[in-house]
Each structure stands twice: as structure tokens, then as C-alpha cells.
Image (cartoon, rainbow, N blue to C red; front, top):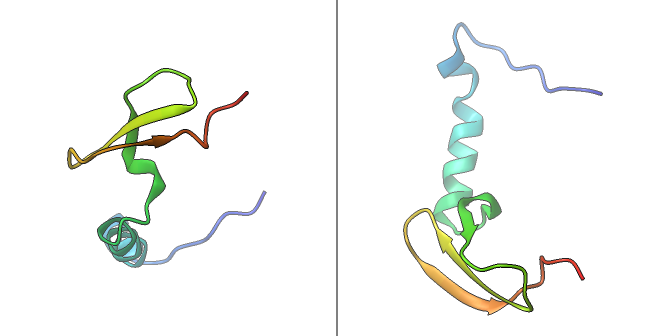
Length: 64
């Protein structure tokens, strides 16, 4: 397994580039890990973002 090696004098500066990238993706609504499912397994799903936005629609992520 290979891991990315980051450099910098401390943890804050080592992760600044990743944090900027992550914030850009999150603000553009492209970060998939900020939602939680409010419904059980079904063909329809209700998800809530960490900012409270509720979305309802087909559940493409559930298993048969």
C-alpha cells in the first residue's frame, strides 16, 4: 500500500493544500461524504447534508 508523503514543519502547513481542495469541493457540492441518510433501505431515499439541506429521490446507493 502506498501513502502520500506530505512535507511541512507542522500538521497545519502539511495539510493546507488538501484542506483548500476539500473546501472547494464541499462548497461546490461535490463532496459525497457530508450527507446522512434519514430513511431505511428502500428504493427511495431522504438524505440531509451537514448544512441541513434535505434531498429526496431514488436510492441508487442501496443494495438489492
